[in-house]
Structures are given as C-alpha cells and as structure tokens.
Length: 310
Image 1 (spheres, rainbow, N blue to C red):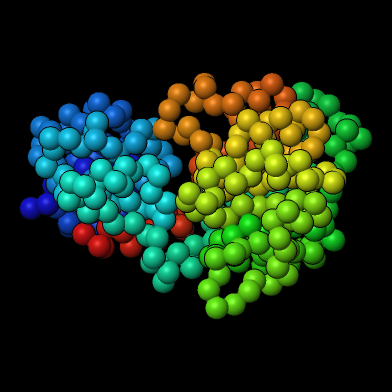
Image 2: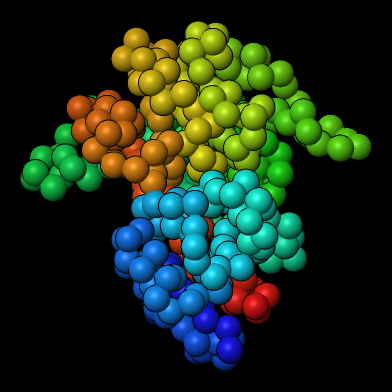
C-alpha cells in the first residue's frame, strides 16, 4: 500500500480527504515544520508526498529528502519553485504537477481573478479606505482613485492566466497591450514591446513562469522608462521582479503601487522580506499570502485531479 505524506491543508475541501484514503495509507501533516516532515518521512518509510506551495514555508530539497524512501512528489500546482527539481531528477524522484494539465487549469480562473482584484484594490485604494473607516473616519477626498475603463493595461505573458486577465480588463473597457515573445505560430492581440509597455501603460500585470529569461525581468532599467503613474500586479512569482528596484521606484514616485500575491523569500523568514518591510513602512503595496489558486472551487478541482494521478 502506498504511504502518502500530505503536507498541505486538505481537510477543508469536501471529498478530497475521502478520495485520498482510497489511494493508500495517509499521514496527514497539514501544518508542520520541515523537521517534523523529515522525521515523518524517515520513520514511516513514506514513498509519496502530496504538496502545494501556498502554505509551505520550506523547500522540498536534499535536506528534507536525503536518506528517505520517497519516489514521488505530487504537487497540486503548476509552479514548482517549492521543489528542488534538479535534486529530484538526480535521485530518481518523480514529480507530478498540473503544469500541462490544460483540461483542468483552463477551467480555474482563480489566480487571474485575484490579479484583477489586486488591481482594483490599488486603483480604488480599497485597503486604505477600509482602515480609514475602521477608525470611524468618513472622508473620501484622500481616496480618489482611478477607473478601469479607458486605462491602458499591459499584460506580460499571454498564456492561460494572461488571456483570462485580458478578458476581464476588456470587459471593463480598458485599452489592453500584450507582451509575449514566446507565442508559437501567432502573435498576441495588441502586441507591444516591453520597453514601450513601461512607457505607455497605467497598469502592468505579470503572468509568466520563472525561467532564466524572466527572473528579475522587472528591474530598474524598465522602471526607469515609466512616463506616468504606473501600478504593477504580480501573481506569478516573487523572483519575476527585483524587489529592491520595486521599492526604490515607489520611493521616487516612478511606481505608484505594487500589488503582489508572491514574494521572493516565501520559504524563508518573512521578517526579512523587503516588500513586507516596505509595506509596513507605509509604501503603497498590497501583499496577499499566495492565495491565487486558493478558492474552494479551484482547490477542489486541482487536488482531486492531482490525487487521481496516484
């Protein structure tokens, strides 16, 4: 019987735990430290790990896996930066992810919906308004925002999530520009160069995977091209932007706001995050704790699909 360590929360999802129990002997470690999980792997001869990066505060790497019986890591996600893929490849540990399961992920718009929500929250100062009223004040004059209609919105990455964000913005009457040099066989609608996007757009939303080409692609060189107020939305990965350059751009007013669901050091000490520190110092930053795919509907579909691979 397969011995499965579940190191991501599943108990809140109807039917998921019941499905897991049909796949093998389950060790439920929904809230656990890296040391606790390693002890579990060693003492119970675990051969399969079921995981998801959103709640995980550590990386699945040599430190966790060395000397264990693990042969499969099944992640209920498209991204895999929470796993040391090279170590797994070198040690014959298979990795299942949802990256190419288009039949599933094309029907989960949760992350793009969050990107649109972060954009609205920045444009309309929603968190600041809520904090203002919570102190029993009622003065709108300091919260006059922007409407989406007629804004120029740039989308970097015209894959599954970028296309969904495009459709949301189009429905609200925005002028949309797209940058994606990796589309095969066609061009995206309203294509624009990356440089011109930063010169012309009011909002830029990021929808790309982390690669050698995209890591730190948003940096002071591009931010230095900005001609007007700019908001950046990041629901991809923290490493897509140079976080220190983002903060510097906010300080010198090149950048008006930054809304992100991800930070670079998600698996480390959060008190060291420059983005969270800057937010706590009053910079116009909104950070959510990697909740992009974390809807009841999206999670249930993704986890059920992933578990059925076992």
